[in-house]
Amino acid sequence: MPKDEQSPCGTLVRLDAALRDTDAWPADRLQAAWGLHDLFVSLTDQPPVDATDTVGAAFDETLGQDGRAVSPFCAALCLRDYLRTYAFAEGVTRAIQQVRARHPGRPARVLYAGTGPFASLAVLQIPHFSADEVQFTLLDIHPESDTASRQVFAALRAEDMVEARHVVDAIRWAAEDEGPFDVIVTEVMQAALKNEPQVQMTRALAPLLASDGVLVPEEISMDLVKVHPETLFGETPAPLPPAIGRAMTLTVETAKGLAFADGIAALPPLRVPDHHTCDAPLVIVTRIRTFGEIELTYGLSGLTQPIVLYDTPIPRAGDMISLAYRIGSEPKLLVAVA
Picture: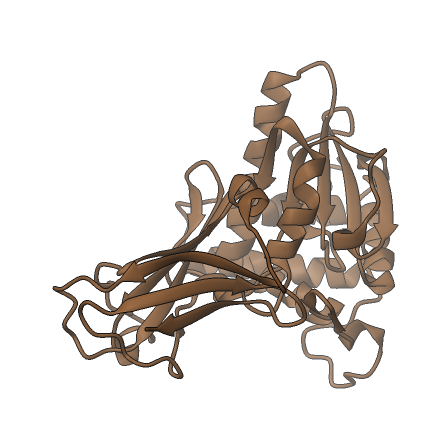
């Protein structure tokens, strides 16, 4: 990479280092994430964060039979959620390092599905690996995202790190001849696995993972908690009370085991313990472990903001809570109090 700190490559190295500095002030890491977004915008035709003209392909989301694919503009803004970007970028780095330790004689093969316009989780590996160490296959449903990510890799002189590209619905990608992959990266989700197709994507791509391969994120879990909403939000949210129980865990293994009938997979029910006597609504709390001990916990990111189930009756001690997950055009966790 060029040593000129003012070059795109030099700026990437500096901002990536600041983002990953866990001893730095949060404001400095946030500023680094914002700087990365601005850098990538400057290298592409994508609109800036303060765009006033919001008409065009960059602002068009795709609503399909498997949920919502957010617009390239919105996908790009996710980069500014600095703890989210750090957790996923660092998780990918460590997953590649693990593969390299196991297979030092060849590059790690990484499939990145749902790249957004900057393919950020691949681009943030450029300071850490060479083309001899990692090769990416990039998938996104939006042609605009593919065009933009091409511009980013070209500007950073890292086109040789891209093995293949496809503008495609990754859930329906016919890729029998392209696997197996050492690492599969997909981050197409919202809190509580609602609206976007993370579950469907995981199920579709799991067969392409090598037997000793890694999915990033490794685990997404959703717990049910009874808590008053006013304690959850603000600058200093209160600690959570003990959970009623785990509603769902998404890993490669659990994704393969989900049995859907008419688009709905039943999950084991939960019983409200006798000591849960507070008169508070149910809340879904999401936790995401990208790799090893790297995780996003309650409230650290937009992905782990608690979701209050205002339309679900408040459960009492001893009540049974039935659970299921629905795929299709409006994926979500289904919660009902018996």
